[in-house]
Image 1 (spheres, rainbow, N blue to C red):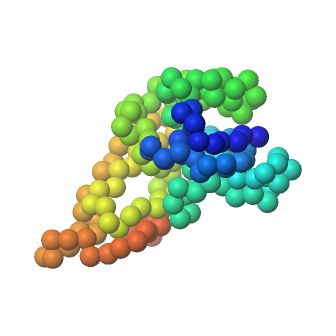
Image 2 (cartoon, rainbow, N blue to C red):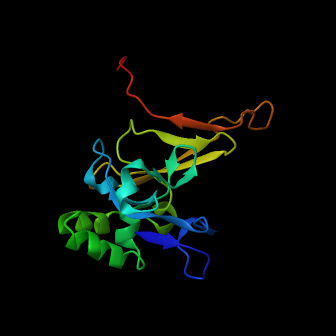
Length: 175
């Protein structure tokens, strides 16, 4: 059980944004069963006591976007090492997975960006942004991808849409 308040040691859940004052809950390790083990992440479930875990809800950083710290970030950063050791000790990850992540060519800048573990994985992004950075991590390799001006209107010289979109890539049946 974790309880976060206002102090200089507050855990950040977005860049430079502290957890909500008085937030109570559980840090837990999550792997979506439809994604590979490399997609694991640490999440924060809001609940008053551990027995309320199932009835709680994940801390959100945006609509449909739970706060999470990716396993790649945990493994590849100095501050994540104690968490990595705990995940290894508890048998939630294995050393082979850690070694695979250490061998990926992830840059520090990309590490906090969205990662795709398969093409049909949904991604939520803002229509008010001209660029979408993604890191493709199919299993034992990685590559950064930048989508530019997806919804930019060249004739109006603006982004004419507002809001967020949940998008997934699909393989065309025509090929």
